[in-house]
Each structure stands twice: as structure tokens, then as C-alpha cells.
Image (cartoon, rainbow, N blue to C red; front, side, top):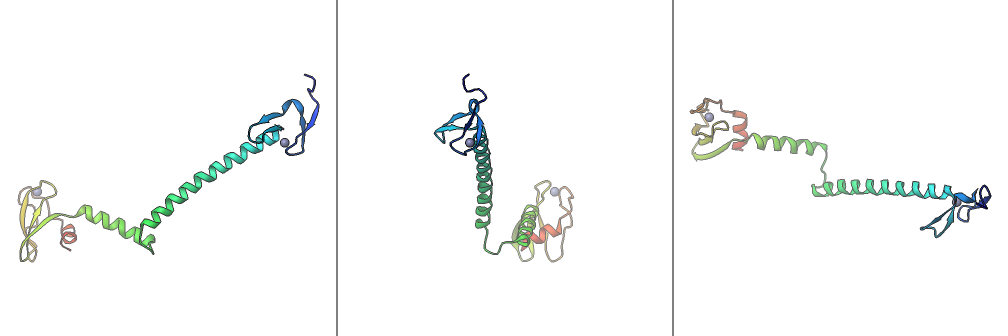
Length: 140
Ligand SMILES: [Zn+2]
Ligand SMILES: [Zn+2]
């Protein structure tokens, strides 16, 4: 090794490094010093991290766009509560004035319910209590 330990000036960064440490870089298309390679790698990973952050941001923005203008935390809470209510809803069928058919969420038995008198209080088949709160959600 003729040049072992011989300092050479990097054409790219003008720094001096051991000549034997120089590598031919495909991007720069020249012999560069180890510092240049290191810097290139760091820049690359930094831009990759940035790209990932960018994608994440874009995803969030798209989600925001899908929502109506003025969407905020309050709406988010309301939506959650609304979904929760939907889940709790009873399957009902209006059959007459103040009379509905309720499908019991527990046994699926269908029974008549009088809204005005709030009767029966329980499923006529399995005695599961009628969830009046859920019933109100279902009615309106
Ligand atoms: Zn260099
Ligand atoms: Zn039942």
C-alpha cells in the first residue's frame, strides 16, 4: 500500500483524510472521504424520517378533510357518544299509537311495549329488564 497513511484532500469537502479511507461514491461520482459518506448517510436517514413524518401528516390531514368544517374535540366526543348510543339501540317496530314491538337484546323475543304506560318493564320471555334509556334513543 503505497499511500497508506498518506493524507489526501477530499475533492468534495476539502477536508483531509487518510488516502486509503477514500471510497468511490456512486452519488457523488468521485472519490470521497469517510466523513462525506457518513454525512451522506445521515442526510439520507434524516430525509427518510422526514418522509415518514410527511406521510403521517398527510394521513391526518386526509382524515381531517373527511370531516365537516369546524370539526373539533367536542364533535369527536359527540360522535363517540353517538356511536355508543347506536350500539345500545334496541330493535323496535312501531305498531300503533304508543305501542311498539321490542326485540329483546338478550333472547331476541319480540314483545309488545306500551310507551305511554312504560309497560312491561321486563321482557315477557326472559324477564330481561327493558333498558328505558336505550329505548328512548331508539324512539328518537
Ligand atoms: Zn469529504
Ligand atoms: Zn328476552
